[in-house]
Image (cartoon, rainbow, N blue to C red; front, side, top):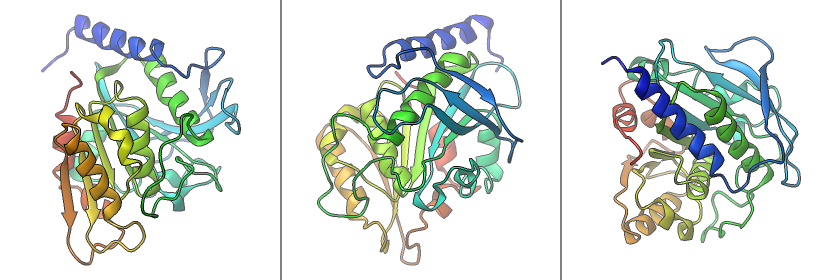
Length: 277
């Protein structure tokens, strides 16, 4: 169905409203520009801003993919795992942009996709991703999380083609932990959340009661125990939410993303069918 100019304008206004309502706004308006060559259809870009969080960088490299067609389109935010940390602005695509096919690639072709990279030695959430019980969410975000907040805010502000009612969030392992926390900090941004083999602070999920969530985890995960996801799902249900929980069979281990992000995974149709109310 073709989108009218009025719908496109309304979507842009929603995105601008989300930007203006943010509580951790930078001191000055951020800017960004293309740097380097594209990779798997993703532009190499750098965000320049004035961070207020200790340790956050004033120049933040990231990857952005744009839809292949015009008109209003959703935005998908992806947070990578611990093994893809670095400064080269490439490894964050190893388990995402570099390997998507089928329905996954079709969904990506019709959307914007934002992929930041966490620096080596840092975490999206500066707490253990596998210990039990999980640590409580801190009042202020980590340096890496502050950068992600700035990137999402900037992208919503500067890309008028984004449909502000269709902003989605997913992440794997350390990125799943980060996704839970990012959504808890800004539940007003996201129409759906899909954390894959990771959990954060169960005490933070009350804000997500109205956000559609589909969590994925391998039953035999020895890197991040499945209990980390179970605690989040149980807490969200207790808060009035209705999350889906995909428990993957023996043999999955820590690679739950192989099933979650597969070409024929039902996750894609589910996620891109959600709209923020």
